[in-house]
Length: 153
Image (cartoon, rainbow, N blue to C red; front, side, top):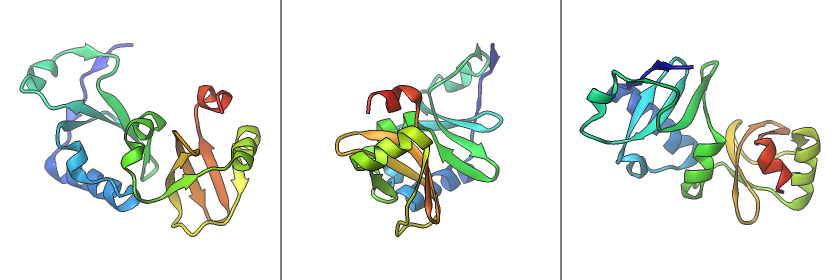
């Protein structure tokens, strides 16, 4: 399915996005200095900065860049692909999962757990790897991990 090339976000929206990533996950905005942020209907992509961006916008595409955020209701949800590539730079809201939690998440996609965190999206990792995105609500942790990731744990 071909679609129009996503639009570049304006500076105000870009600042809101990077402020959210910094506030929620501790990502320094300078980490993304070499990228443009492009927007579709409810998706955001990181795209390498290039002087040719304007000439590319006439293309019909399936996808561009790295899909890194989705708008879910009024919230921005980071994609697991984004977190797997940039999650090692996160300094906040990172949950290191032990074997028991991983096994429970594999079976039920959620666990009952109380953490000293504000509710919202979190980075899930095991002892070595960033696994992807989760959602922490008071007393519950939901995993939004891809099946191929879960199989390999």
